[in-house]
Picture: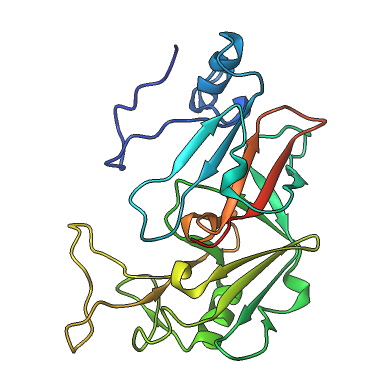
Length: 256
């Protein structure tokens, strides 16, 4: 098994690349070509039959999730998986798991759903990234979500905090639309307790833990990211088959 060794990194955790060949780190060096990664090796050695893997993060209170190589665990979702095309680069090559988000809305507790941002903001390309703890969306969309939820921006945390945690377990949801398919993220999966780099919690004046919405503003030049605060509410099957048939099935997970 060939793999790269990171000698200079800012992450304290190990990262296992299981993406497209076109996104291998070695390609940053001129004259190099990608080598078979973990999923490629598993297929070539007959351990799995398809160049896919399925991700289930479970709910926010769970200590573990699961990743299944070469298959789908039908016990982890309800209904039928929906398939979406992977957005490619200008040359038609798929390098990341980027799909198209066509709309968003917020459903407050006991209220009616209202859209997030103007219709001109959509469609938007979003990266399904399990390596990101939060979502990162254009600042206008994030401020719209925050306003609807009564959150205010904290420069210390780089995100929007709520005045208290009363909404954390309320019956509200953030809704994502992908060409008519809806994935709803309940408030209890979306509202999180941020921690400092040493693992300590941020506190309100009364000593209780701070509640923050699980999306941070990104710059207009950044690729929007749907990280763990979204992925916990979906069952995602990542398909590494190259174009012209790349796709990523996506399905809402059943309630815990």
